[in-house]
Length: 235
Image 1 (cartoon, rainbow, N blue to C red):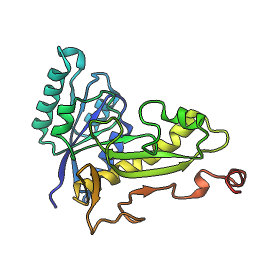
Image 2: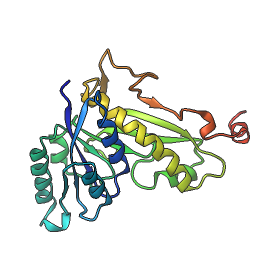
Image 3: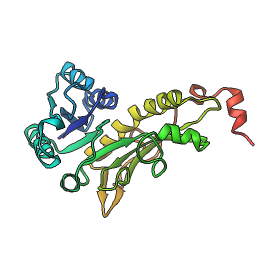
């Protein structure tokens, strides 16, 4: 099996990066993580990448005169890694339209909401303020519209009666760590692709409850509900 060479872009600790690296350690996983690039030289994820034996490259924005020069340096690093796919994992910098266009259909992002709801920052806070009963995360292809690209996979979690923003974040993050590796596997294996602004799945792609699912829920309802919580959601 020829594995798709994948680079990860981060700005911070890179918890989703770690989930992708661990998934790619499996012999039958269709993607190979070839390196990690960060726009923040102090990102904790760089040390974690090095500890996993990966090339970790810091390309701080402050060292370049403008956005174009910074992105050119990132492109050079990606070329050096031989990257075929990019995974954004907490990369907190908007990429230019030209950069996005070059990687169209080959760049993925994970967002902590059930898109198209709550695009942008503070999604958990806004979900709580809106009184949502279901929240979650989305892995999507990156387009020039922020958090607006075609959806590859989503995971749903309940919002419990007395959830804080931190508690909801932790519940969603746990699902991000499962959803992102499966979405990358779908793309790297050719089972999911971006065509004409939509995600198209191959006829042999398992898009139900199997190994590579496009919809996830917690494995056990007991992980997130007690009987009083369940009663709250029952008419």
